[in-house]
Structures are given as C-alpha cells and as structure tokens.
Image (cartoon, rainbow, N blue to C red; front, side):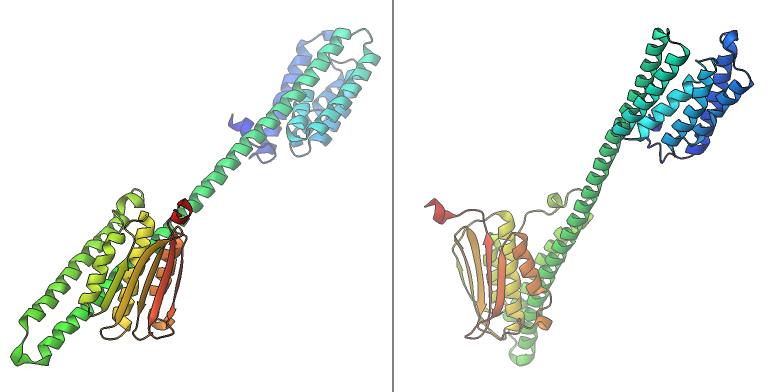
Length: 394
C-alpha cells in the first residue's frame, strides 16, 4: 500500500527499481518464449527485439510516453515476424499502466486508442482469422489502462487527504500559538494589574505609617500606625492569593480556563472603592448594575482597579474620584473620573496601565477612552457589550 500511495514520479530509487523490474520482466519473457510453441520460438532477430523492448523500462516513470513508443518500435516488428506473441505481453502492459498512472485521462485514452489501433491493424495483417486473439488483446489493453487510471485517482485521493490533514495540523498549531500568545498577554495584564495595584497601596499605607511615626514621636498615634500596618498585611495577603491563582495557570497542564479559578467581577468593585478610600482618595461610587457576563464583569473590575490605582499613584493627595457603572443599550458603561493632576495622560508615566485597560476592553468587544478632563483631572470611559439590549426588549 505504501508503494501504491507513493507518487511514482517522486519515489526514492525509482531508476534502480525500474532497472530491476526490467531484468525480471526480460527473464520472464525469455522463459515464456522458451516454454511456448517451438514453431514460434524467436530467432536471433526476434530475441534481439524482445530483449531490446525491455531496456526502455528503466526510464518508464521519467518519460512514459517516449518509453511506450520505444517499446512499440521493438514489439511491432517482433509480432510481424511471427514470434511468440505471449512473451512481450508483460512489458507492454507495464508501459500502458505507467502511462495511465502518471498522465491525464485524455492522454491515457488517446494512447490506448493509438496502441489498440496499431495492435488491431497488425493482428489483421498477420492473423486475419484470430477474432478470439483480437478480443483477448483488447481486453488486456483496456484492463491495464483502467487499472492505471484507478491507481492515479486513488493516489490523488490519498494526497488530498494528507494535504487536508497537514492543513488541519497547521491550523491547530497556529491556533495553539494564538492561544499561547493570548494567555501570555492575559497573564501579563493580570500581573500588571495585581502588582501595580498592590504595590501602590502598600506604598501609600507605608507612607502614612512613616508620616505618623515621624510627625510627632512624643505623641505617637499607635492606633493609626497599627491600622496602616494591618492594611499593609491585608493587601499583601490579597496580592499573594491572586498571585497564587495566576501562577496556578502557568503550572496547570490542562486548559487554562479550568485552572484560572473564578474571575473577579462586579461584586468586587465596592472592595476596590473601599481600598482606594483607605489609600486616601475621596471616592464616590454609583454602581447601578448588579450582574454581567463573567468576562465583561472581570474586564470592568480590572479597568476600575487600574483606574483607581492610577488615581492613587498620580492624582496627588486626597483626590476626589467618582466611579460609575451602569447598563444602557446592551452594554456596560464604566466611568472613573478624578480632579487630580493629569499625570496618567503622559505615556511615559502611564506605562502599561492604559494599554492594559484598552486590551481588556477589546477582549470583550468593547472600547475604552482615557484622557484629561476639561475642568481638570483625568477620566477613563469604557463601553463593554453585554449581549442584551434591554431598551429593545421594552
């Protein structure tokens, strides 16, 4: 089956194999001529023509039609001289099969018609009464031609299956690479959001504790220092838990979605607001939506987290911030605006924060705009489709 499936024009060692085939077929033809009718045993010229007809078989795959013509040039006078007619049959049929298996159907039919016409003409001249012989020769010619055509179509079918399988494998590899790239980008965003948020809060809380310790050592506010240290410890525990979840994704051998754990959602936004307040920001929140698809809720959570982190980091001392989340026209609208310094508008200071927020919005088919406000401060606006249009339902 491997030999049949393989393209004969690209098969390895084809010239060597065809040379061995020519020797085998020449030996078989010699035995057939010797064991046949003694009256039809070839003479010296007949033996020369018979053996010479096998020489072109060495190049039958490289040039099938010229090889067929060369064989016919030797076989035609061999039959005309009334030598053993059965001896060269094997060679003729191998050449006919090769022409059919390596060429088009049109070429095969044209070649078969030409060979059969020449055979019928030669048989009519040498054996006018041999009707049975004529039918036998015609049957063998058609049988080997159709056998070659069937093998050719079978090889094309196998090649199409192999090509389809290779294309599917390439598609799977490309999809796997795309998924890996998406997962790496997601992990990078998660690590940025987690570490930037946590480190910023720890820095602010540490500054508060340091300020309290240095402001008036004689009247040390132990309660405020203890609260700042407790807040730092709580922030570290939260960051450690989220970091462990992210690292579990990297270690997990199965699908990443199974190792990711529950996604943060809209129910975590009030905690972000409270954390920003503990860091010194004066935050007002208006959350007028209770639920959203998990991916949309997670994107909104991370956008609010990064926006509040930027406010705490860049907007100056005790900035006023307003966080709004509401649903309108089949989309979740997120707005975080502050009245502080517009440092986040500077790409050099913004780092990957704004880029990450835009990527999160695009990951759920949404959009995000961020920039300075006309009355001062900075504003982040995101529109995240939820797939439901309640206005249309009403």
